[in-house]
Structure formats: C-alpha cells, structure tokens
Image (cartoon, rainbow, N blue to C red; front, side, top):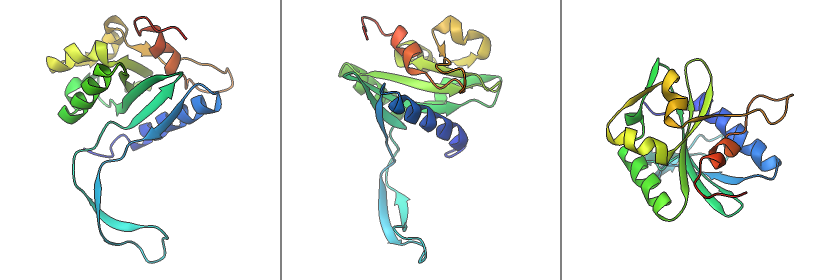
Length: 171
C-alpha cells in the first residue's frame, strides 16, 4: 500500500539531509511519473491535479565521492519483512544500477524501531526466493545497523555501514 511508510521516509530523508550537512553525501528524491490533468487548489500556489502514469522508481539516488547509490526506504510492521515488498520494477532499477558499477540498498526499519541498511548484493538472492527476513536474521545475512555519529543525535549514519560491506571500496 503506497504511502504506508511515509513517516519512515521522512526519517530517512532527514538522515540523508544530515549526511549532506556533514559533507558525506549529495542526494535527490525520485518521484513517480505523473500527468498533469487539471488545476490544483485555488489557494495553493503551484498545486495541480495529477495521476500517476507509471510505476515509481526507487525512492532516492545519492552520490558519495564518485560512488552512485540508489535506494528505497522500507518500513516493517510485522515480526519479519517480506522481500517481495521490493517491487519488480524496483528490482530492475537496482540491477541496472549495479550493472553500471553503482550500489543499491534498502533502508529498513523493523518493528522494534531498529534501523538497518541492506546492500542489494546481499538482498538479491533472498528476493529471488521471495524470502522473509526476521529481526534475528538481519545481521546473519549481512545487514548493518545504522550508527551514531554524534552522541547528541539519533543514529542517522547508514552510509558508513554500507561502505564497509562494499567489495573493494576505499573511502
């Protein structure tokens, strides 16, 4: 159901913004394609009525020291997370991005509010099997917890744990 994880997406957007402030990342959102079909609210400048014309891309794309990273923010509300929550068109985008020497990942929040980054190279074989992942299996499969960079702030750094698991990456 679209929009279910909107609060989690805001948390992830804030983390990417904070990494930008640290000078570690530049990023932008990727929105689904839309067709403008009419005017919006008369008192809201710039608004318009639109319909989606296609499947949405992954949520964001980022750049870190020449490394291109594409990702999607996923929120798990049950005891385990189904890899089928990565839609087929997102799988295609992740595969294409990695074929171009980019990196793809999922930023996942589990029901206990723990925050994880899962590289696509780890997740891809599980997605092909339509597997589900429990909280207890995340570290076992190669997912990494977000880390605290500043003791006065919540854990917002998913980038460094991701970089740790990328083969041959030297920062």
